Amino acid sequence: MAIVIKTPEQIEGIRKSSALAAKTLKHLEQFIKPGVKTIELDQIAEDFIKENHATPATKGYRGYKHATCISPNDVVCHGVPNNTVLQHGDIVNIDVTTILDGYFGDTCRMYQVGEISEYAEKLVQTTKECLRIGMEQCYPENHLNNIGYHIAEHAHKHRYSVVYEFCGHGVGLKFHEDPEVSHIAEKNTGPILKPGMVFTIEPMINGGKARCKVDRKDGWTARTIDGRLSAQFEHTILITDTGYEALTDIYGDF
Image (cartoon, rainbow, N blue to C red):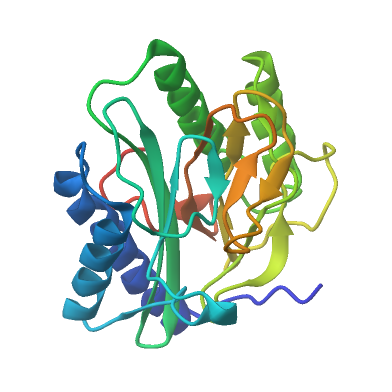
């Protein structure tokens, strides 16, 4: 495993790209309403990213054709924007990765469409808590897998499952770098965290079983195996000399 320790210059570039990714998700808030198509949201995001002199990392990646991944309800991740119309009561995740001046910033968050059920609200809130708990494990000399250990501990306490088929990853100079960041892991295992490491934490928490199935039709959209709801939040994290900086949390939500 070759984990790249970023230089101060590289960190500044990643910080700017991460801020733009966060601003893109913020920009989309006003458009999340019943009746909007996910393909329309994707176009709005792409326009915003390009207006800010950047490009979406997903477009063209391994043949993917869109600027975002949009994952409603039982879609765990990698939802392909299409003519799906958001309905009142839906929950939806939008994942954005920007390339600005050659540097990558990666983030995602949940949105609610109108008023959502108490069950959905609890799942979304617990998933957000899982990300925060994972972030709290980000400090020098800690083991990487303590992130996943504590995320899973919190999710299981609330009787949710943790997706193990997808994980976080190093990011910054490339879209996907070492290390892989598991969201369910053994305590005190894995690489030692060092200042200058940059990676994503992006727990996917399911209301039912942990397994996923990928739609054969598009080859990307991953759904829960049992049709139950799924939620996800993601930040790009920098390990600092004293702890961490969430580069995509520019609005202080965490």
